[in-house]
Image 1 (cartoon, rainbow over the protein chains, first blue to last red):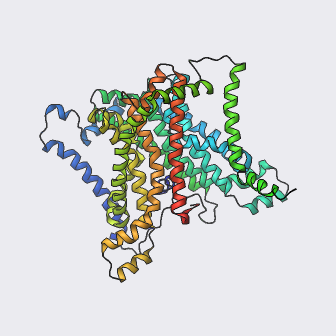
Image 2 (cartoon, each protein chain N blue to C red):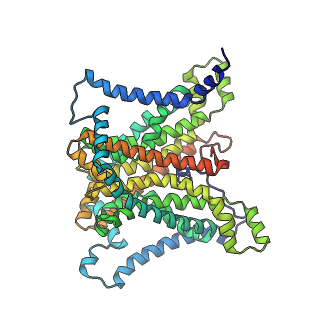
Image 3 (cartoon, chains in turn cyan, blue):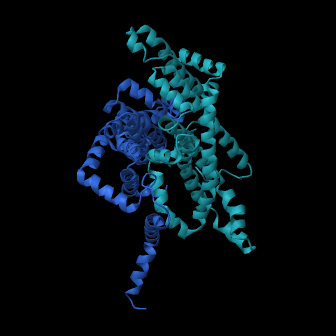
Length: 283
Length: 263
């Protein structure tokens, strides 16, 4: 996760400054501290509401980890979660797929063509800086409350990380390699296929990781404000009924979804970079 | 070819990119305006640049726009300032104290990976529809870029400089004030660039949910009223603000920390 965070920040992560020879304690230290703090948080959260006397009205606002776990188990056991989860996941999948299909070729194109880049730059800058949420009322007017307005919001959110990272990767392609391939009579299509896209792969996967976060965000907000079904709808309705545990369950499911997809991309990334002699750019 | 042709040539060369971009924007709006000469125009579904411009003028003249912007700015300022204070402090401590980083890193990563916007309905239920709830949403969304960037920045501090201060008998406080803070500043600004965008999302989420004024509420209300020209005007205003903020920070980065340019 360190990488995607740092990339979000446009800054390369600094290396760990720890000595080479580490004892067992040294090696386990991060894990121990990390799990201990999470455990402590959970225990405090579980115990404090029981110790501090509260009025029944105030108690309505609070939940405990055990309660959340129970609700989560119930949601899966009764199968009540599958229908909204399926709706959310299909919006997520369609939108993300569409943004890859559009963003990848477009990124290669503006990376290869100076004129096209100059002409599209104002639009890319404007749309990338603007929170995609402003378009939601408009998208709802155009596409209704169903699946498609969700797909569009996810698409608009996920498109730009992929587009911009592909562009950066293409711009950083080795000039010499391009010239060599050209000298052997390659067309622009061959240049893209043989040199540019393989070289841009680390950038593209990094963009994909960012895009996943944006896409999950898109699903959540689209369902909060303009949908009839889905996990986000379930959460808003639960919040209205003071079912705080259900809201947290939704949050956990969304987080797991986003972590799982990030993990898939990381898997893809390590597969694709096996041939690379050493870690190339992209970070 | 006369002598004065040379600088003119270099002017178009230098601004080649900007001119092309401007041209594309002009073409875009011209195409948008003229496409309705051949297509039927439905004001309930789409708007036209001239109508949007009229709406923008109306909103500016009537003062509605500035009122909404001022209302939205208040929670943004509170939430964002809190994010700067908490994020920078936490980031410095996490970057500097290895064990604190071990302890907090997994939790922070967990929070960052989960779509915190999903807590917005809960925050509104807890803290109400006023400034507090919105400020909290904005804080939650914009604090993490600061934490992670500042942490990375502290880690990137030159150990040689630290050793020099230590050798000269500098205290821990000297270390923070004289070495860490100056070298971390570029990272803070870079974090701010990310955080501004997320903070804007926070405003919109808060106001779409529960508000009676503000720029996000204005967009949602104009959408409900099918006043698409006014809605487009507000959307363009938000786009302009977002671009001005992120590009402004980018510009400040280049101006203030030229050695980081291109990174």
